[in-house]
Image 1: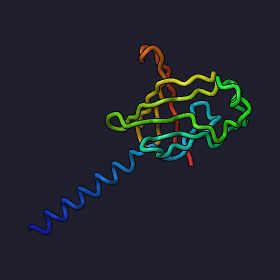
Image 2: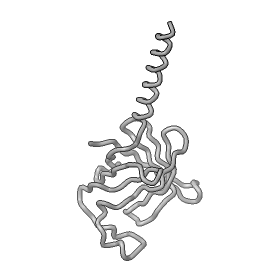
Image 3: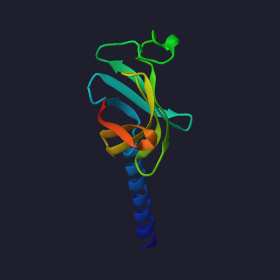
Image 4: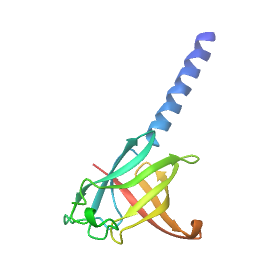
Length: 136
C-alpha cells in the first residue's frame, strides 16, 4: 500500500515536471508575417529573443541609434528582459525593427506551439498583438 502511494506521488511529480517543461517558450518561433524567425532562450535570469532568420535579410535601418542602422537584423535581439508574470506569461521589452521603437510588452504561451505577443504604449492603454508559431 505504501509503495503504491509513493509510486503514485512519483508519477504525479513526473507529470508536473513534464507539464512545466511543455509550457516553455524556449525554441524557435516564426513571426505572424512568416518573414522572421526568433530564437527564445534564457538570458540573465529572464528570457530574450534573437532574430535567427529572415526570408529577406535586412539591415536595422529604423534603429534610433544611428550607429546600429547598418547592422544585420539577423543576430539582433528583439525581445529582452522577459520576466515571468503568472502562468505561461512574461513581461519585458519588445523591439519592433519595422519602426525602430521599443515597447513594454507581454508574451503569453497560449499552447505548446502558439505564442501571443503584445506591445503597448501609454502604460498599456493601447496595445497591438500578434501570434507566433513554433517552428523547427
